Every structure is written in C-alpha cells, then in structure tokens.
Length: 201
Ligand SMILES: Cc1cc2nc3c(=O)[nH]c(=O)nc-3n(C[C@H](O)[C@H](O)[C@H](O)COP(=O)(O)O)c2cc1C
Image (cartoon, rainbow, N blue to C red; front, side, top):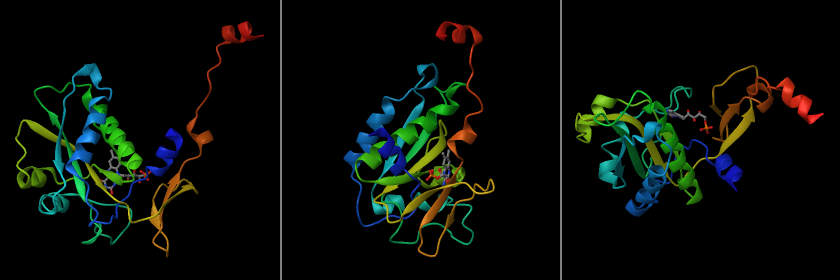
C-alpha cells in the first residue's frame, strides 16, 4: 500500500555499506523519475549514477548530513551510502517553473528504493563547486539534489511534535526520532461553498 511505503520512506543516513546497490537498480529508479510530472513538460533533469565504492568516495565528502545532530559529521566508514543519484538540471532546458521537479523525482525514486527493500536520504546541503569538480560535471548542468541510497542500518521513529520543536534527534539506543506536526495542525480550513451546502441539504 502507498501509505506503508510512505511511512517506511524515512530519511535514512546510516547504511550497510557492504550491501551493494546495482547499476540496474539505479536505472530502475531513474525510470520512475522519467515518468514524474515536470513543469511545462520541460524534463530538464539528468541523473548521474554512482554505485562503485571508489566513485562513491568522490561524492561523499561534499554532502552535509543531519544538521540538527550536533557533533555528528555524517555516517562513518562502513555505514555510508552504497550508491548515489546526483540530480542535475540541464540549463539549456530548464524554465522558471522547474523548481519543483527535482523534489518530485527524488521522492519518487526514494519510494521506489523502499519498495526494493532499500532506503535513502535526499541531500540538498551540498558543496556544489566541490562536487562538480570531483565528478567532473559540465557547467551546462546545475547540481540540484543528491539522493543517497543503501540498505538502511538505522531505525527511524516518527513522533508527534512537542512544543513546535521540529528538530530531529537520536535517543540512547541510536534510534533517530523525527517530530511531525499533527494532521489537524496542517489543515488550515475546509472551504465550504454556501451554494454547494444548499445543494447538499
Ligand atoms: C529538499 C530536501 C533537502 C534535504 N537536505 C538534507 C541534507 O542536506 N542533509 C540531510 O541530512 N538531510 C536532508 N534532508 C532530509 C530531511 O532532513 C528530512 O526529510 C527531515 O528531517 C524529515 O525526516 P523524514 O524524511 O524521515 O520524514 C533533506 C530533505 C529534503 C526534502
């Protein structure tokens, strides 16, 4: 069920690094991204795939992990992602309305990964010049997001938010807790057109 997939699709940041993610799996995920909505149907997104440990090592140093967890510099060796999909925009194709495309593609690929027993994290905090140099991205392409992927090695719990504090945290058992606002606090109102009410009565 979609609800189960969405529930399971947490942001995972620690992985069994020795459990590989194949090139074929990454291509399957890009096939999902290909079918996603894109503003004005411009389809500006391009994808750089990495699943080889040496190549992964060219990406990892340029990503910033879990800013709210102070003193944690990201996953240690052995717990790093086994693969990455770098989402870039083709500046020859992109439009002013393309800003949402990369997030839809990233989330769709993550849902596909979860369905395959994997998990991952969207990374937007990127040393973009460093990454461009490291993996030699042509200036025509703008780095937008990185999707880190692997077999999750951590447990993530979703909690009801307390006192409006959105900061995720880790407990003594290394469980990562993510506070979420309550549904009733997200829905501002239900518009009720008086004429439609008339029709209902
Ligand atoms: C556009 C976007 C950018 C993000 N960038 C980062 C990032 O740079 N580093 C990171 O550790 N997590 C990043 N995240 C993950 C969020 O921190 C995460 O979604 C949030 O804490 C809620 O957790 P959940 O995904 O398990 O619901 C990003 C998420 C989104 C949607």
